Length: 258
Image (cartoon, rainbow, N blue to C red; front, side, top):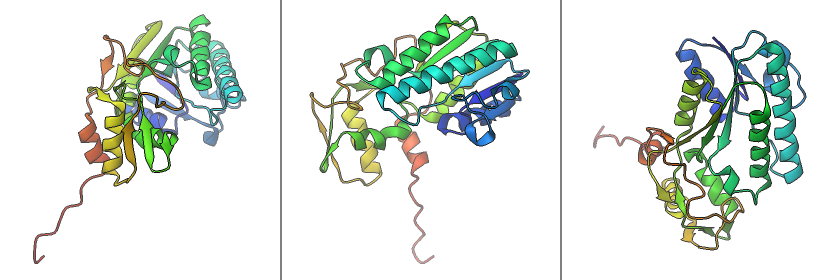
């Protein structure tokens, strides 16, 4: 089965390409660097020729409201048009858990617009909504930093490893379309500020993390349950401590006298 991964050189895309190839699939890693641009349409026809599945893991280079909306609407329309012409039978798209609860942000309004375009298309589809990735802990801290303090709301948080996101996407891409939404998340729940505090401590980052009920997540006011998946979510296997150890292994000490 030929599977085209649009955005196949990014964090999730590159992991997804590897996992699909390990499972014996014919995979095209499509990205501007390989001559495929979903925003302009360049290279899409050739990349999608003979494909059974297209997986969209692209992301906008800008989160500015107008730019991010234009990116996701234009890119998604192009993909769906070229997929229809190529006879692609399954469109898989990566989205975000809680999108409809985070519409104060232009980014999430754009993701919802993307989802609605996919649902209105005639192409069978699976939308995969993932929780935040462990890999973005520092970025969350950075956008909430004031001086040497990180102020975050003490809401529930259920992030997951990028490897687990890619594994879930691979399984869904190789299965029949669900014509609906699948939610995926990590195996553990935390308070947002507590997890970011642990992440920064592991990096030896001296910033102080403060639980602030008025704190914001990427500039958005969030409710207690806004960032966690539904009860039917498929959960990854990687726990946060195991991910920390793999991401930043403790150096082995040499035996005395060695």
